[in-house]
Image (cartoon, rainbow, N blue to C red; front, top):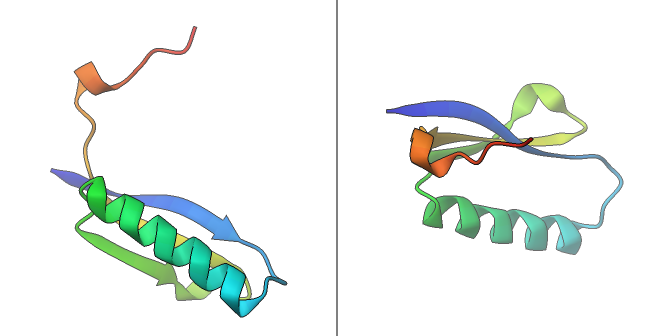
Length: 66
């Protein structure tokens, strides 16, 4: 089972090369973590909000914050 999650929001202004580097690194990390779909939410313009379909975390993978 997977769920849609807001992963990151970038606020302008950022240079194109900076945005490209961040999004490329983020995409790699999300794919390696099991994301089945990754997209930029078009309704957040001019911000870039990255969304992803991620697998549900199993209880044994969740750490409690005390």
